[in-house]
Length: 163
Image (cartoon, rainbow, N blue to C red):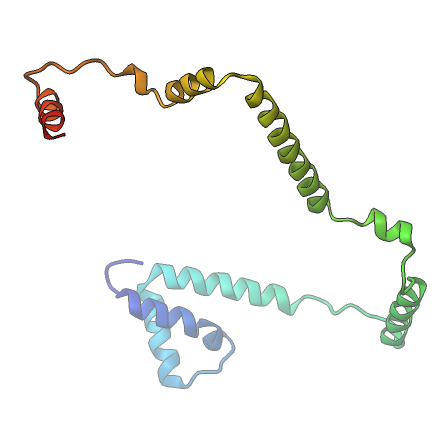
């Protein structure tokens, strides 16, 4: 769009272009759109694209079908439905178990087995070693002593005196 027209006007023009091309507008509206198309290159390009599409659709040929096409089509649909059993066999239903259910079962079994093996291994360790590993896992033993004149050191000193 160039600087001559405002965006809202272009939006209105583009919405009415199909009606303009199909001769569905009154003379006043046609004149306004023609005047706008002379000044706005974006809308003129849109009008050329729509005209090309419309011309391509006008030369499109209809597909010739047999007179009994619809009846033949529905007869084949009915035959296809009739060929499928209403109650599939047990083996067919068993094969159709959704993949997600199988994966969920495997995961649940894995969690259960992991919990059993984990508690068995946990019972094998002595309590002191478990406590030491628990504390180390939170990295609580990695703190160094605070200098007494630091803010943290003063805070801990005051907290100890309060007890």
